[in-house]
Amino acid sequence: MQTVQEKNKAVVRRFNEAFIINGDLQAFKEIVAPDFINHTGPVGNNDAAATGDFIIKLLRPAFPDIQLEIFDMIAEDDKVVTHKAFTGTFSAPFMGQQPTGKKATLRIIDIVQLKDEQYIAHWSIREITTTA
Image 1 (spheres, rainbow, N blue to C red):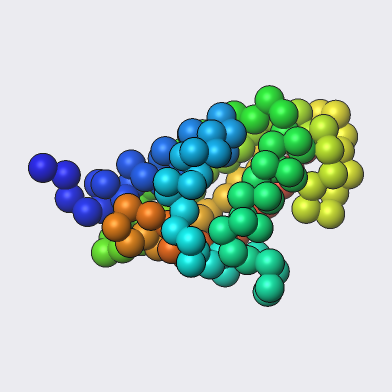
Image 2: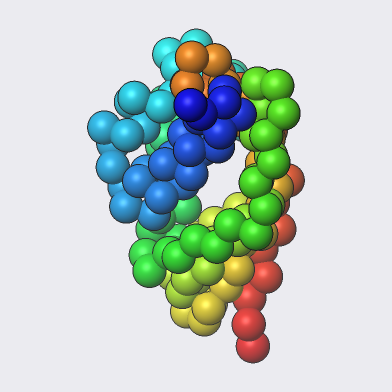
C-alpha cells in the first residue's frame, strides 16, 4: 500500500510529465484543485487558470522541444519538493528574456502542497541559463 507521500510524489511526477511535457489538459484538470493558489505567481493572477496559461502559452512555446530531468523529489506531510530542470531550444520570449534559438536550461525548485491527490498550493524558485 502506498503512503500519502508516495501518492503525492506520483501526482507531482504526472503533472510534470503529462501536463508540462506533453500538454495534456485533462491531466491538468484532474490534478489542479479549483481553489489552487500559485504563491510564486503575480498577485491577482495566481490561480489555477493563470498557472495553466503560463505553462501552455509561455513555457511550452518558449521551449517547443522541452525535456524534463528530475534530480530530487522529497515528500513530507502534504508537501512535495522537486529539484528539476527543463531543457530545450529557447524559441520565444520567456521570463523577461528574449529567445536565443540556442539550448537553454530552466532549473527549478518547486514546493507543491497537495490535498486528496490534488495541487492546492505552489511555491517556486527558477533560474534560466542558455548555452553559448
